[in-house]
Length: 220
Image 1: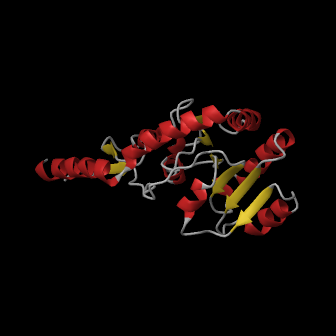
Image 2 (image 1 turned 135 degrees about the vertical axis):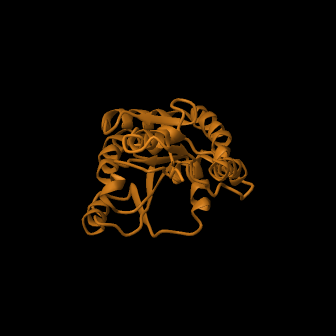
């Protein structure tokens, strides 16, 4: 029997093919917004969801926010962070930065928090997929992420449903976030596009891919 690796993204598949030619790509199934509501992206609030770990790049997030807050002091950054290897360093640092950043415990009602927000931020150094991106997009939020290996590039259509930033370019990230903050219509247009593009990760779209994959393995 030929063993096949199932990768979550095309970028990840490229890496696996260095070791085996037998690689298929099937993205994660994502629990999308089923509340019947979407954000009107009118709040002066951006959201970040991720552990206080080195992977998530919260150090970079804070550098971006220092730039952005100078131009938009009436906006807030809401961080929903779980425990990670940098919790003891990052939490005191964030608390020292003032009221423009609000820390929250992880919540099972994260869709309610997306619906209160206007933009989702991701600053990871790497992401196998990045579930929070389509989650937030399904709530009508434009998203901003670095083009890190390998998840965001497979989810975001740059300039359509969000912005994909050259990896670790803090200034470019801040500029695109400020662009969204300045332009209500752009947030709405990108958010509506995100609702549509996020649907490709729904269970109903993913199951046929798995069915075809498994049937091919059985008949091979």
